[in-house]
Amino acid sequence: MLLDTPSLYFRAFYGIPESITAPDGSPVNAVRGLIDMIATLVRHHSPTELVATMDADWRPAFRVAAIPTYKAHRVAHGDVEEVPAALVPQIAVIEQVLDAVGIARLEAPGYEADDVIGTLTHRAGGAVDIVTGDRDLFQLVDDARPVRVLYTVRGIRNLQTVDEAFVADKYGIPGRTYADFATLRGDPSDGLPGVAGVGEKTAAALITRFGSLGALLEALEAGATDGFPAGSRTKLAAARDYLRVAPAVVAVASDAPLPETDLTLPQKPRDPDSLVRLADQYGLDTPLNRLLEALGKA
Image 1: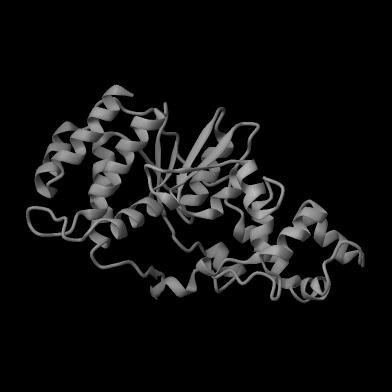
Image 2: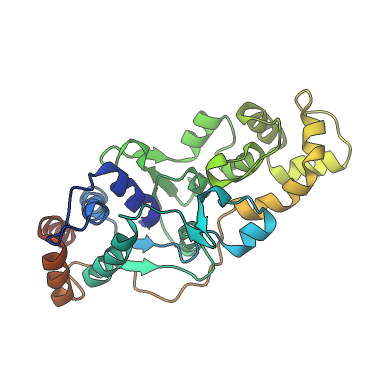
């Protein structure tokens, strides 16, 4: 089980009141929420391995070089992401808690958490569940392995299971072509413009007709006219420069440099003394006890 940790702690932060505080009055809503999320996931899904993936770089240089608008609307200043002030200090606490519990926490310099997930999925020898609220990771679903996304849009207790059939039914495309579809459609939440004038329905029709973005571009370059919805060929031709670089931006990496790490789900804390200190300092006794109970029964 691979956790898109930033997606989860943002969800926890916005879903739990900031009035949930530590003894010193500082907010711990994201910390408590994430701990409870992990406890629920362990209880309900019993993973043998669990990884909390992190953003070492929320806006990687290789993506910005290709598409300068990539996540530009979320820049606070310089290379700093716009994050609520009450959340910023909680991220360090989350990292300390994960380390003390013994849950593997992985990041890769120059890459996002998505890329860590993509790399671990590529390396995995068995079934993989990806927990996220980010549709970008739908591109990894693969029924043959199987790789599924447990999508948090309806909450951690009511996860949507996303497989190839879900993608095909929701978007009208072959189940493993989400990245190609998203490249054409674009994604305003990530600053990806897509092809001007090509919306979701046209993008789906193009990917379904040609099977992949690569085949679509080959047909475009060859001068083919069959299979292009009315007006779309001209729009695609005008977007050649974007389509040349966008796939490498949209695709999650499968080769991020990751250290060899024991991913086994811990049954007891790695550092009990540190965990007690964190529990006392931030008032985390109740959620940590729930998590430790879930780990002990896994």
